[in-house]
Length: 273
Image 1 (cartoon, one colour):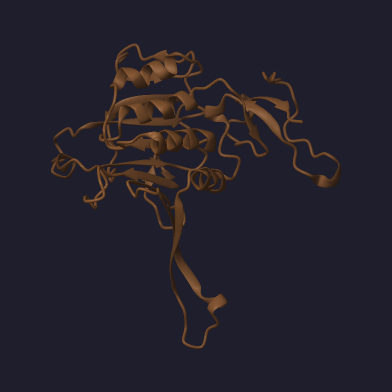
Image 2 (cartoon, rainbow, N blue to C red; image 1 turned 90 degrees about the horizontal axis):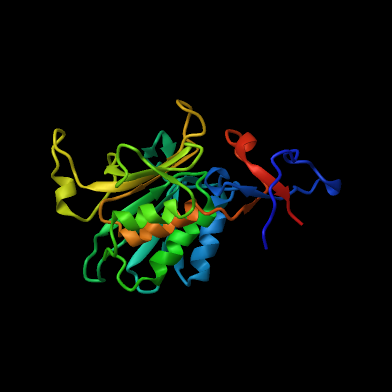
């Protein structure tokens, strides 16, 4: 069913009973995470059969009741049944910044159970649409070899150009942008602290170029803070990045109750229900 989006619909009216209204909105790459990025992704992982573990670090005084303990950090770890892939909710665990935004989810995979270290990692900040991260995780769960790359950079670019995105004039083989030039996807040098299983990523000197990885971000207006950012280490298979990119650039609307302030005026919306 196609949902028509009306750019003139008033944002966020409150219906009787003070129940929050819901909208079908687009484009999805500017729709935000609906203030439920953890829940939407955790629900996806539960549906895939992944096991969740909560790691809590805190401090408790000798005479203090357990419920009064001061929780310093809390990380939720989701592990696939074959233990080859995992996802961590790290927002409450002092994550590093990506595009000046805190990392919320870190997704990793390894080649086999005999290798303890991840072959690659991918990082996602708040306000990335949960549907996009969910589709990436579905693709990761479905592959038998999560550390083996299939295809190449062209596979990633074709997944967005098929939805109307434009190739970069200077780097048509490595970069693309949405038609409004607010969201970009590119293959290039990865930011600091991005973990990859390739030993070369650990030995690159400051004046050397390391292996390229895919990066994506939404910048609602030039020079203003990013809405969200995502970073894939060099070892992330291109077919998995293509699944992410195809979902990100999809023209299908998404359901939202909470709209990002920085992109609210850019979203087309139609009341749900």
